[in-house]
Image (cartoon, rainbow, N blue to C red; front, side, top):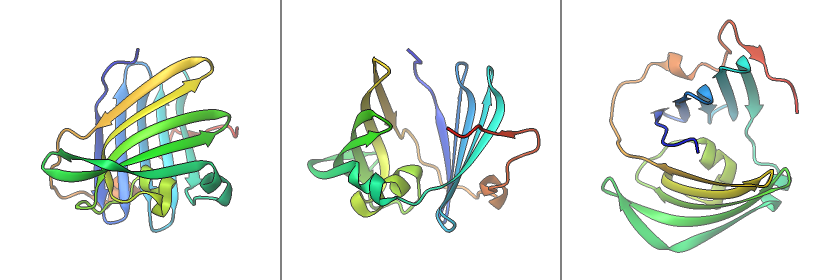
Length: 172
């Protein structure tokens, strides 16, 4: 029901910045630093305002026990990159999620997905299909990389300091 949304991802060394904007959710920016294993989420939401959350992204033993990853037997070529299938079953916060991911080892980048799965799945994901049931609603999400462009990216894009005007999200 949210329709199609576009995301822009910036990659530099072991740092990634993901920018997503939609009329329903507003703007969401995730900055991941693989050197410090931290992730900053910035949300500028029409209902909640400007909030941020800074988290460690280390995969805990409990997380590992709730993730089952199987290397699939399928491959897909996406934008000229050969991608390997990985099938994930994830249990988190009382929710079961199934993910079908295709990733390439030709792109070396640190992403929230690679941080979440650690060494359980290799490569940079170019295609993901997720299905889950959240509060009785079946949710299907598809992520597909549609273009890759090499460009110079400023270090400022990966700053883990919350910008002025953002408030820390309440702990849940």
